[in-house]
Image (cartoon, rainbow over all chains, first blue to last red; front, side, top):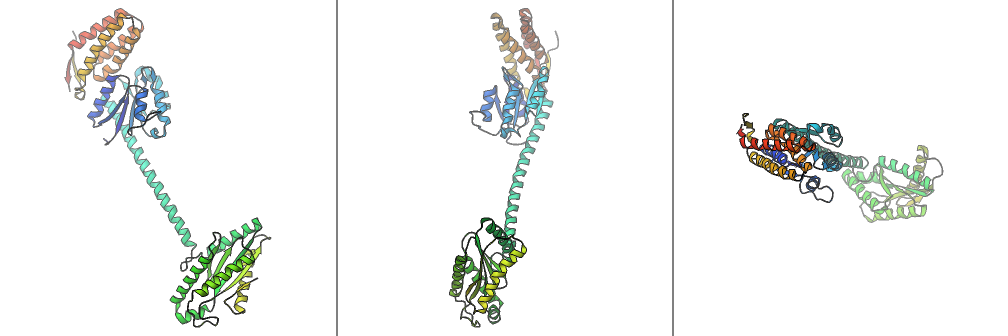
Length: 331
Length: 99
């Protein structure tokens, strides 16, 4: 038998209560509670105004409790969520058999007949306790399952984040950039707001790599990414690594003037990093050229429109390069 | 006289004396209810006797209880008295063997 099982016996006849508990105790069930009427049983179960003092695993309930109706009591107990999984065994006399249908309807699990037969009684108790144990186990497994599914969700989220992150710089990768740009363009169109895009490229980066090596090149990319990230700190802004040494920054709800300001700030912050670049034809430090495109979106957002939007920023970037690098140009 | 040896499950040994004692109380109660013509209470006592007797191994007590219950329903004082007397004798003569 299971340890720590609490059994509640509800019967108005003291002799029956004693008889049942004698059998149960012989089987090793020491924790037996008694009630001779509705109120006493509710007291044990914590129903109504009463507070529950212990968990009950099995209820043995007389179908007739003097003037009270055991079936109604059964019904009230089963209405409580915490007793949905607690088996109730009804005690009936032969003549009360007609009530059984109602007892089962009220949520009773099984019944025993008076006069109580020891073997029959214990067999039914054992079956009910086994059921109770299985239900408890199932609940435990359900909890475990829920925990696992939560863990999985978390792992998936992490994975998703990892899949949309550039491995070296930690900025959004190209995939996420494409996704967010489309979303923001649609939103700009819906809200009739201005959206800006900055395309930025490290000046003479090939020469930097050739001179200092690829590891230094990677370190340089990381520092620049960090600075760009820190300079574009509004919640909706998105800085991404667009390609090798190229970065892109989406600035929703930002007009040309604002975008140029941000681009200029990035440019200044990069040169302030004072990353030595001996082979640069612009400055003694690493510098950035930036192209800005700002527009209101009036036409349908399709791949062609998105491409156009990026191309305009790219063209401005190209102009910045042509005009001498380390500068911001807008379309 | 019938053989009054009754075999009872040894698990019940600790509670049998109390059970039999309670039946003696029942007799006294029924006798006093009879004086008040309180058949309703007598019926309840008969009903419980019927319900518990066999469970303890005393089929005879269940039978007596059933008869008392019915007699109380019919308000048959004579029959109730007869059953109570019989119960009294039964309780005197019954010999319990635990197995």
